[in-house]
Image 1: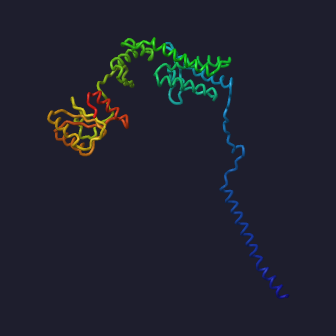
Image 2: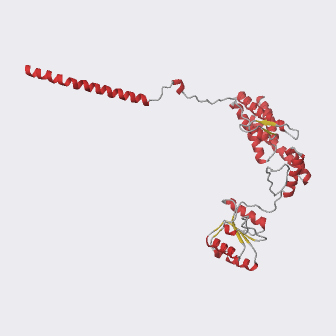
Image 3: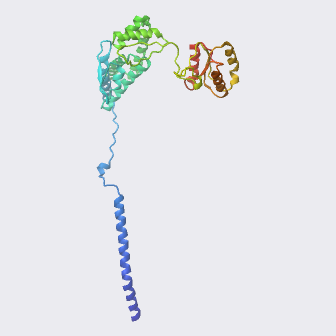
Length: 353
């Protein structure tokens, strides 16, 4: 027994250093883990800083909502109505970049206004919509529409506040609007002659000289013509008239070029083939080509596309001097392409195929 006890004490004395080393190793590993966790932990943020503030919805009813709505409409209308008529004043608009802009256009002024109060800004957005619709549908009268809207809203709010039924008031306003529109249509005088055009253009542009130029251009091109205004590089205002039809398409192959210096293909009094189909097989147009070779007339082909054997045959005949021909793609895409080709046929006197 004494020997066994001595043996146990000896073993315990041998294991004690190993136990101490094991405890020290575990403590070291835990310390390393704590250090690594602290290294990758996010920085300490206060609870107040982590909180996200969201703007709550503001709900208003009855008189409060109507008052704010009318206030926003009046602010926009008061800024716009000073430009009414030929004696209207100008408004200066500040830009985030560049110089300020001086305008007297109602819809331009209305679009630039944004109110800090969200409820008043709703009224501003409503009257901006009125001006935008007048501009898109009529092209003019945006200031008049704004002033009429302001008057209808202010008087309508007074009526609603005094106890008038809003639904009945709405029906009455719509009925009165139809009656006034019909009466204006009866009394309207159509614009006839260059003098009427000059008067309208002078009021719109604010310049007698510019009104004369615009009236001259509009009278020259007629009701179906197109007018484009571009910035001039000279010190004088000029009018340039271009006869004919302009198409934003070119030749499908550079071999159709007739003037190598200017890179253009010019045809004089040509025959014109207008179709919305693709021309790929040369046999489809061989009878037409044979007739034009006999008559020595040039040919212009306006098609959806010209490819394959048909394009090769046209290029070969063009290079050999057998036939003066040019092929172009029809302008537009989808359904609009067919409408464009029909317009080209009408303008050139061709038959649409």
